Length: 372
Image 1 (cartoon, rainbow, N blue to C red):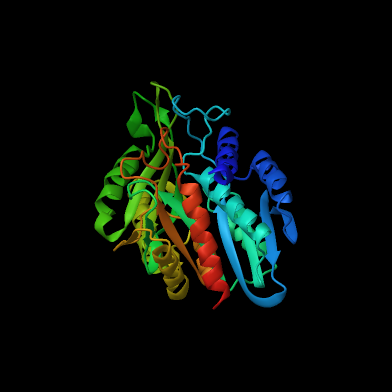
Image 2 (image 1 turned 45 degrees about the vertical axis):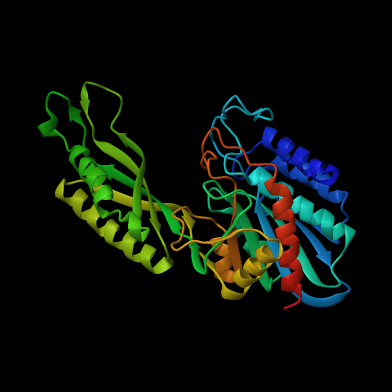
C-alpha cells in the first residue's frame, strides 16, 4: 500500500489545483516534476497545448502502443465535504481526470522499473478533452503512429473496479449548434412593429424535445438561451440559442444535424428572421476496434475483474474518438461505484481505490499488445 500512496497523494495534489481546458499549465508542471523522476527515454512538453508525452523504448523494435489520459477540469463549484477540495473557486475535477492522470503516472513507474524488451510505449497526458479540441491538436503534432491506442474513463453507476466495454461504438458523437436569430426590436407596447424571435425560439424548444429519441441515442439538448435584452420596455429583436446534438455514430449525426438545420432555417424564414448556424466542440463517436477490445477483456479476466458488456453506446462523448478515427484503439470504462454521484456533479470525487486497478489493467494491456 505504501507504493500506491504516492499516487493517491499525486491525485489529491492535482485535484486541489484544477485548470480548465487549454489552461493546464500548473497541472503540466506537477506531472512533469513527477515524470522526470521516472526517467523516460523521451519527455516531450507542449503537446497540443500543455500536453506531455513520456516515451519508453525497448531495445528491440516492435509495436508502438499509446495510452492516453486527460488533464482538464470543469467549470463546476465543488461541494465542501471533500478534504482535498479545489483551491480554485468555480473549477474542479468532476470528471475524474485527476484519477486518470495518477493512473498513467503509476504506469510510468512500472515502466521505469521494468522497461519493455521490445516496442515503444507512449504515455500521453492530453489537454482540452472537455472541449473536444485536445485530441485533434495532439494528433496533428504526433510523430509516432501507434499500432494500438487505449484510454479508460471512470464510470459511476457501475460496480467498483468493474471493466465496462463494448465492441464498435462505445461513446456517441456530439457537437454544439450555435443558432443566431436576427429580427428587429420595437417598443414593448408595439411588438407588431418589430420582428421578434420569440415564436421561433418557442418552436425550437418544443422541437428539440420532439426530435430527441433517447432509445436510439439521438438527442438535442438546449444548453443556453438568450433573447433580447433584460428590459421591460423593448420587444426583442435577436436571440442566441445553444443546443448540443448527440448521435451514436457519424452517419446518424450527419443525418440528424442536416435535417435539424433545414428545419431551423425554415422556422426562421416563417418568422421573417435572419438565421446563422455555426458549430463548436465537435466530438466524433468513439469506435472500439475488435482486437484491442479483446485485449482489454482478456486482461480484465486475467486480473479477476468483473466484466460488463453494455448493449448500446453511451450518450456522452469523448474526444478519444479522434484517436479511434485515426488509429486502431479502444476506450473502456472503470466502474467507480453503484451509489456514487454522477460525473459533472459537485459531489463527485474519483475513488482512490481505482488507481491500483487502473495501473494493473494498463500494465496488462501493454504486455498483451506488445506481443501482437
